[in-house]
Image 1 (cartoon, helix red, strand yellow):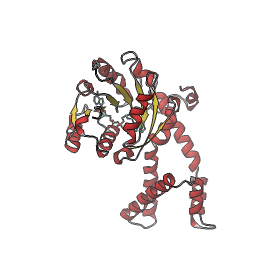
Image 2: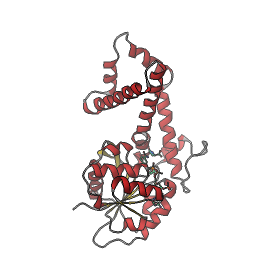
Image 3: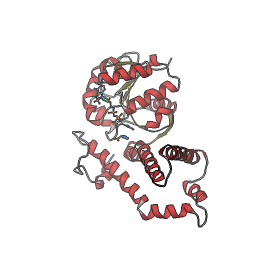
Image 4: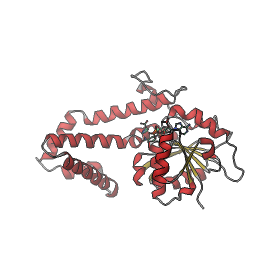
Length: 290
Ligand SMILES: NC(=O)C1=CN([C@@H]2O[C@H](COP(=O)(O)OP(=O)(O)OC[C@H]3O[C@@H](n4cnc5c(N)ncnc54)[C@H](OP(=O)(O)O)[C@@H]3O)[C@@H](O)[C@H]2O)C=CC1
Ligand SMILES: O=C(O)[C@@H]1CCC=N1
């Protein structure tokens, strides 16, 4: 018998986890979702046939409580989770998918010694191709980590990292799918500008990014060598790469990912307000993270 998993927050990443777990064969009777919006509740019931309820009801009897809510909602939701008494037969493990907030933020509100594991997944979990990183909080044992790794391996790949690396993970693989989709948009628009239909440009871009991703993960060849193999001497690719580098491609990524980490740092501030208009902490605060 599998352990019951309660997903708190049926938004984008909560749905991705739900869909991935169902695709991987987990029975819907072992899954429950807590979602605030009535409209969203109805959509999830219709699409997945899963029970959707409120936080207290979802947490009751669940062995694993996954928080898939926005950082600003965390304090209120964790207080509700903490108020649900532990079932003597099932130890409750809290798993947070929330960016930025350290495990001690949860540990301070949950009953003393409650295990918390922090995870940074990504949306390809929808199609069982997630990249997830897992970091234990102070009361999480190896067994708790193994439980979470097992859950996430059913929906993609998993690495275990130290918690201090979680903001960097968020900047790379948590947000990473958005960079790939932005690149796809840019390639499609440029292809249309060069005379392709949007439908053909979209198919070319999607399959090209997919194929490159499979090559990168399945061959044992480095990205540098894979790129060199495409770059024929005095050919077309060399010209395009020269333009990308001249326009600051690498630098843009470095700065973008530093800004991403700065946003995580900002979220961990006491009031959990996201960065707005550059008023959050500077990227020089990043090195102070634990
Ligand atoms: N999207 C992504 O790719 C990733 C997101 N994450 C993390 O996951 C978290 C959620 O992100 P995302 O899914 O994008 O956000 P969404 O806004 O799509 O989802 C959050 C959902 O939680 C609901 N919610 C809020 N409060 C409650 C409550 N008390 N009870 C039940 N449901 C509630 C929200 O409802 P309402 O909108 O009505 O408030 C919303 O439907 C964030 O902390 C983010 O850092 C991590 C990795 C990747
Ligand atoms: O944008 C965000 O804040 C979340 C975290 C990683 C991906 N989405």
